[in-house]
Image 1 (cartoon, one colour):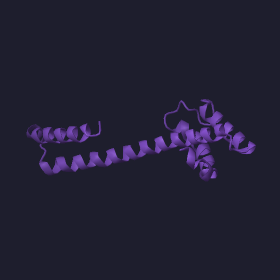
Image 2: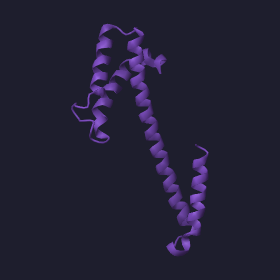
Image 3: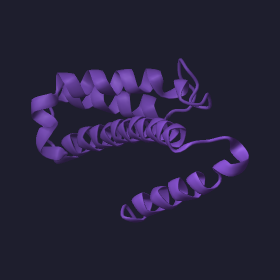
Length: 123
């Protein structure tokens, strides 16, 4: 899949260069715009990776509790955080795109930071 993306981008760039007759584009302008697209693509990919790490943090907390190594206070904290995460009716409702998960993310991030050394093996 990954190898198809550069091929697609190369083909798109070539098509764009051929399209410039009617669009008053030159190669330098197309390269500039193509660079802007590449920069935006990198930003989107980094954001996606952060989301994936967030999911891995949730899984690590769950595995830590299930493994039985967490003390009773840690179990309670993780249980409440996971319950808060799955509940769509919280301080900022999850139905709101993007911002609906901010409060959930802050709670999970707090626990991950607090238990960082203990959950590292569960990632």
